[in-house]
Length: 224
Picture 1 (cartoon, rainbow, N blue to C red):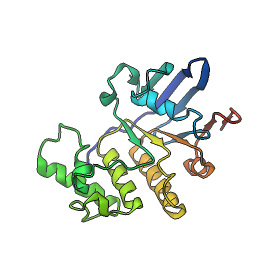
Picture 2: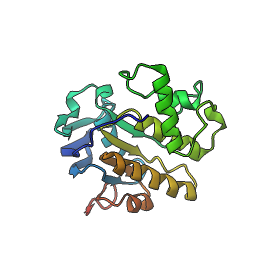
Picture 3: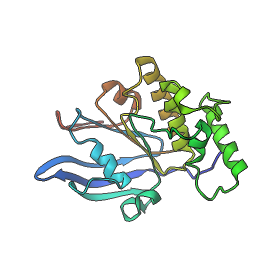
């Protein structure tokens, strides 16, 4: 039994400006249609991840940020971070070591699904979709890197996100797993109708995403 959500009409970033002191780190205006990926590329330390922090609501107060962010006409910046429903994938899966695989996934299911059996079924169903059928009782420590990455994706998807924020989630995987996870993440985003922002320093990530690219901290240009 999977959770249902209304497909997104898209993400709108308008006149975003993020600075650290007198240094401008990122300036961007972009529309990200449902199911598409907007990539922000730059070397390590260029500040590209600050955009995700700003959208998610956890930007360090040392930064100055302005602009508007909306999904389906909802002003995300007016909401508390937990109410923004931004699904985030980081470089590390960040699974809870004291919980089973199934409990890690079920933890993210919205509270309006209160029946424990239903929550277990939802977790089991999405694990099966990730080719992890029967893994619900496993200890996360026993999983491979690719399996942990798929559990992290499953956990994000059951949370009913409005959008996906990808902070170099493929960078610690080997070449073959990286290609598999790119395909899986982008396909699931398209299927769910989720707008996606990917930050990366890897040209192959940007090519696989297939959408517009904003380059910062190098030759600052936009590629359509």
